Length: 279
Length: 151
Ligand SMILES: Cc1cc2nc3c(=O)[nH]c(=O)nc-3n(C[C@H](O)[C@H](O)[C@H](O)COP(=O)(O)OP(=O)(O)OC[C@H]3O[C@@H](n4cnc5c(N)ncnc54)[C@H](O)[C@@H]3O)c2cc1C
Ligand code: FES
Ligand code: FES
Image 1 (cartoon, rainbow over the protein chains, first blue to last red):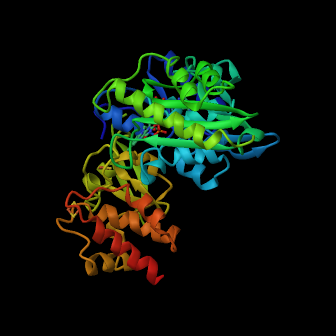
Image 2 (spheres, protein in one colour):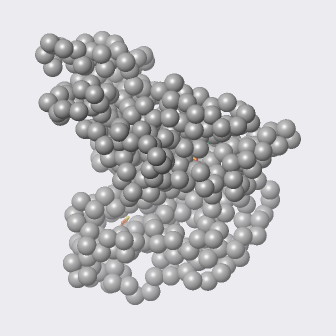
Image 3 (cartoon, rainbow over the protein chains, first blue to last red):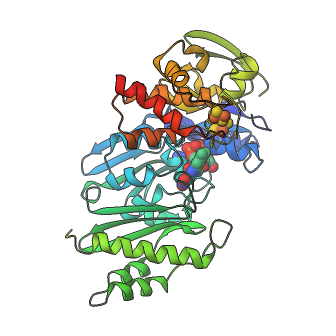
């Protein structure tokens, strides 16, 4: 039960959704797109989210697409994490996603909701950042396609009335060597202390991280350090640790120093796994 | 806004409920339909006490709006009558206070339906969605495995 009321709409197609949003805004309302609704419910309950008009996009066919189309793997934003895992078309995504929340909750949390949510871990974005995926978004100005690496700057940079429809990933990038490691403060379900995902493409290791900073990221500088020729693993990892984004989280889950220690070990594990593999 | 009249399919019957769009399925089941088997715990998706089945899959009913359940088949523990998993819970002493039991039963039931030959890793993955404050995990795991092995 939420402490505020809203109207609820379930558009059947993209245009209807965008038009509804525009109309509601013009009438002075505060519309919100949702797909899994779990963040609306859990944060709404404690007054951290408010809307008076919910636009539920989960019936829109484009948002439910799943499969290969030409050279791309297309995944709709309203797919649940469980649906993505069961189909297992992008092994790194399956692995990263299967560590989010718990099995039952993953049957409700959606790909788009995880990537666009307020809760900052947004772990499902990591594989897409690594695979140079493209984000298909729609809004008042129609459909736009952006490389996610450009569009995702701490959060997905969406304009007013825009929402994420799909993610398209070059199929040459979905079946490459990978590793995904989630370290929690304790227990085996729930939010990460740090999650690191890595892919090896064209002989280079790519790394993206959630839980170190209050936003997920992939850093070119870190990757340059990790891939530097002629240096020991120890020196490459040390160099990577000097070029991290700021700020490093320092909270009850883990101090900044502890997080850096965990990250150092994760980078060592990633290099041990991917260094010797040809790609 | 205000109250809406929704038709839900629950335990094989059509039920009309008058709820707000902002009401969760858990709230509608308990408050409007007197189906108190699904238990309120954390109301935050963490404990699994409110688990029901929606189109055969486990669902934390505190994470679903009642309106999202329109057109879906909802099963609560009241709709589960004498299934092997229920007997297995009794035979294996898989509850103490019983508060978590309906949620565990609904999760385990769906696990058995989807993965009748689930291995230990699968059982663990699914069971991690529910919490038992009385910590009867060993017995609960035994109960599920006894049904899986029989099938
Ligand atoms: C029990 C539990 C455990 C969790 N554990 C983890 C975890 O381990 N790791 C982790 O990363 N997260 C975790 N989360 C957080 C969860 O992934 C996010 O809250 C996510 O937003 C939920 O997705 P949803 O589809 O239910 O979102 P919704 O409630 O539908 O939407 C969330 C937000 O995203 C926006 N949005 C949704 N879809 C789109 C779209 N297509 N385009 C643009 N904006 C959109 C909405 O406007 C809203 O602001 C957990 C959540 C729960 C309930
Ligand atoms: S009450 Fe729903 S998960 Fe705890
Ligand atoms: S039996 Fe008491 S909470 Fe599980």
